Length: 217
Image (cartoon, rainbow, N blue to C red; front, side, top):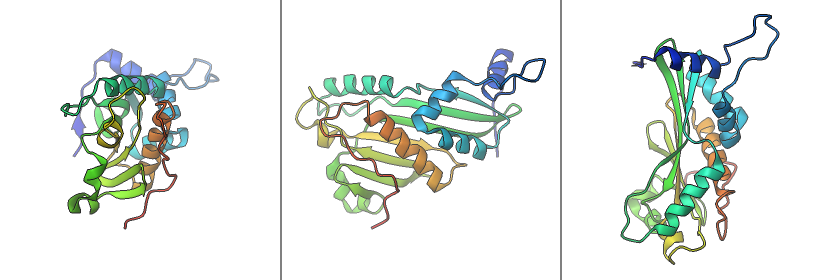
C-alpha cells in the first residue's frame, strides 16, 4: 500500500531538480542535482545513497534533514555537555531523509537519524537485549532489526567536559530506516553514517565502527 502525499507546484519543481530531471534546451547540459542530495552522499556514501534511491523506485526524490556531519556533531556535543543522569529525553537529529516519489505517491523513504541513546552499555548484557543486539567491539553494539526495516547502532563516545558517567550511560545512537533496503545496504548506510559523525565528535577515545555487520553470537 502506498502513501498519498500531495505536493504544491513549488515543491514539485524542487523535486524535479533533485531528481535531475531538469535539462537545458540544447540537451547538452548535465542534469541538475540537489545540493542536499550531494551532502547526503558525503554523509552516507555516494554509492550507498545511489543504491538506496534506486531501491525506492521513484522518478524523483525530495531530500530533508541536516546532512552535515560537523553540524550534527556540534549539536550532539552541546547536548552532552548539558546532560545530567536524570535527563531521559534526548533530541533526535535527522541527518538525511530521502523520499522517493512516483507521481504524487511516496514509493519509498530512507531515513538516517542520530541521538544520544536512552540505552546504556550495561543494558546490553541483559538476557532480553543480548538476543537482539550484537557486540562489534567494546564500544559498539548493533541491533540489525530494531523494528521492521530499521537497523540501529550504539557507540561509546566520551565527550570532554561532560560528567563522569556520560561515556557508559549516554552512548550515541544511530538509526537507518528504509523498508525497501536490504540488510547489507542498510548496514552500509548505517556504518558510513556513524563513521562520518564520529569523526567530527572529538571523542576522547573514538569508537571503531566495523566495516562488516557483526555476526550473531
